[in-house]
Length: 505
Image 1 (cartoon, helix red, strand yellow):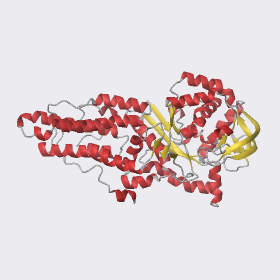
Image 2 (tube, rainbow, N blue to C red):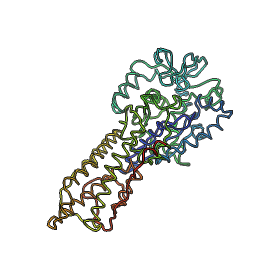
Image 3 (cartoon, helix red, strand yellow):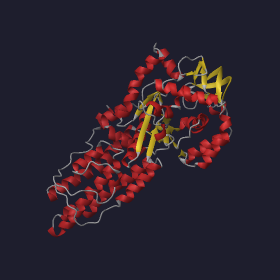
């Protein structure tokens, strides 16, 4: 089992927003889960530094592009660890290893006869780093994402023969109906291909910031012909002296937002085929985080700093909100109030109180000792584990977390239905009381393992409070996993109360 996951590499024309944290954090959940199931995993993220907009920001600040990129890369590198995302490699497109590989990759395409020189004349949105047709603009002639008019560009470029790969791409899509998820994004990408493909420019003239083409160093690689290649290039130098391509290519899963679907689902597979590589195993296209029904971005002035949220609620609470409140794969509306509501109603009340009540009852009725006893378990944990794993294999992150939370609520209902406080009044119920308390600890143990990918700080705390093994192997999501132990103490609150004035200060 091998699982290689990538995020897009992010533009460094500004600092990270919660939208960037969203993709990276969801990716971390998927990789952590696969690791729990015993997979050999590799998680890649990084930054795209060779964009026109990055060059322009550097000029505005009176800096050389590389100097600017070196400074701004710092908060981007810190984003993943601050969201508790365990990244295996952080790539910068100014890395010497990446630049050398891009030149080799593009040379292979050139040598295969898939590159030619021509004049490009058309509209270009610097915000998207993409050429635009009139049909793609608003009635006012603006980019629909950035709400600014694209620039007119006319220059001699090198073009990739994308049109020559139309039939091969259609055949690829027909052979692999799960190549792109969700299904409606697959249909969107395939329809774009079937509608006819135009060759696209892979170089820019007159811009010194970028990777020079190996056959014509007067031009640099177009930002997408540079950036997309990172998914392969990283494997050649992430581990010095070791080439990871045989191990992780093409078992790669790309995470990307819908605005870059065409580049990843159409251009990228064609470029890979032209260079002699297998296409990726799968691409998952998610929607936007929305704020007031508008995409979150610095250019629109409505960005949220993810670190401000984690400073108030903690990292796990923000991770939970990202996965739970917004259906992954679709657009979703972000709300600060939503973080507070999820924190109080679900994390603190549903989960935190369940742990507090369970440990308190084990202390009160059994002096902290846990024994198996005789009582029917409230839910089939093995079935839950299979359901969650199947959902995460389909990138249904939100559905997987909802299924786990149904288990949390089932345990809360079990407490009410079995009423241990009533059982404790009669010694004749001793075996059943033991069984009820065991089932609560057992259920919490399995659910903590299932939650570990989502709540990496909280799950170990639950297991520690229950004096259960810290092993997070997925085979532990089953009934009867809890060990009989002594010394359970009343647990401290998992999610202490946060006053609203503090949360909004």
